[in-house]
Image (cartoon, rainbow, N blue to C red; front, top):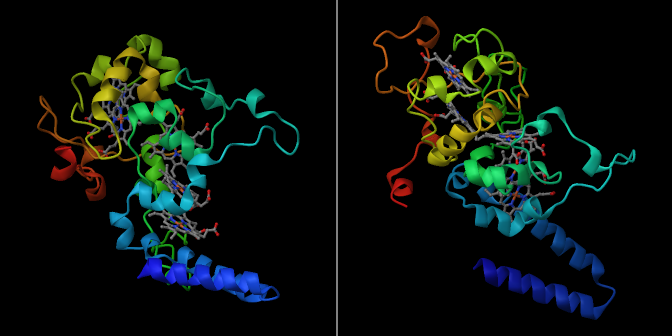
Length: 265
Ligand code: HEC
Ligand code: HEC
Ligand code: HEC
Ligand code: HEC
Ligand code: HEC
């Protein structure tokens, strides 16, 4: 049905173009198709939950194709600009776009398996913002389809006090042989079993280089707060739950849990 409509549009477009002087009509049809695509149900609940990357990319190829500018309008060359976090020794290759850094750079591919919908959860266009403004209603993401909570999981502060470290990792790492696994081979070992991470690969690479772990737990910190991670039970865990952990979930968010179907792949 859809195909027929677009074929029909194409024929109208073509005949309009051939007829000459009817460009206005062609323009109108194009605008209409654009609006159709823009408001495609796939952008919203519930369809977005089932969408695959291929489906999103069939209209949004530019997300993976786009390149950063060679130089900024002020003349700073991309190849000469390095941000502080880009000095982590896991940082590789030339400057890349935000989307490519999370989907296709070597590090992203090794450690993660993010989908478009890991970040893009859709929104309800009728609910742009509560009117009048209400600080208690924190569910609104103001038409932004991406909830910043998602970013916090990998770009939060390193909660070194909670771990009993004497100071921030940058200062205390030498004391612990620059090795997170000195403690984490036995503590909170049931980790990263979610559908957007590659749990085995993270352990393997993290054993060789603590910057792999630190990279998602303080090494690329965009927030002043730490993410309140779910606290999964682990083998050898003490029976008493510490005060700070009393309100923590003990499982990952439902949308991130690995389903049986995913597990059997
Ligand atoms: C049928 C084509 C089509 C499909 C499929 C599609 N989009 Fe879009 N999308 C559009 C168009 C057209 C726009 C308007 C874009 C513009 O003006 O640049 C848009 C806009 C967006 C925007 C910007 C929204 C805003 O309010 O500024 C995001 C984010 C987005 N799409 C993500 C997705 C994701 C994620 C998927 C898959 C779940 C998806 N799209 C599937 C065509 C599509
Ligand atoms: C790491 C999280 C993340 C992933 C994964 C992700 N996006 Fe985005 N995307 C964002 C953020 C953040 C924005 C800025 C939008 C905002 O302010 O709400 C954005 C913006 C966009 C936009 C509109 C602006 C632009 O750059 O054109 C489109 C379209 C889009 N994303 C499509 C996609 C598609 C398609 C995929 C999967 C191939 C994808 N995104 C994967 C976080 C992500
Ligand atoms: C599952 C973990 C994860 C999530 C969730 C995540 N990131 Fe990242 N982010 C990374 C990793 C890993 C890198 C480094 C990739 C590399 O070096 O190739 C990175 C890199 C970045 C960079 C640096 C890009 C560059 O070119 O230097 C920015 C900015 C960023 N993330 C912002 C965000 C934002 C905003 C969100 C939420 C929309 C987000 N991230 C969600 C793991 C994550
Ligand atoms: C001296 C031992 C030690 C070292 C070294 C250490 N940790 Fe921890 N870590 C802990 C303890 C103890 C906890 C809290 C355990 C609990 O839940 O009772 C913890 C908790 C965590 C948590 C969960 C925090 C929360 O709020 O739920 C993360 C994430 C974490 N560590 C990551 C790291 C990373 C990454 C490194 C290396 C950069 C590291 N740790 C180094 C002992 C350590
Ligand atoms: C690509 C980003 C990324 C890397 C690399 C990474 N983590 Fe994590 N870590 C996360 C995310 C996201 C979560 C929360 C997952 C969830 O919701 O269950 C997490 C959770 C944890 C937790 C809490 C465990 C629980 O569920 O009780 C600990 C501890 C932890 N990580 C330690 C480490 C250590 C040690 C390394 C290196 C071997 C490491 N992380 C590498 C992103 C990362």
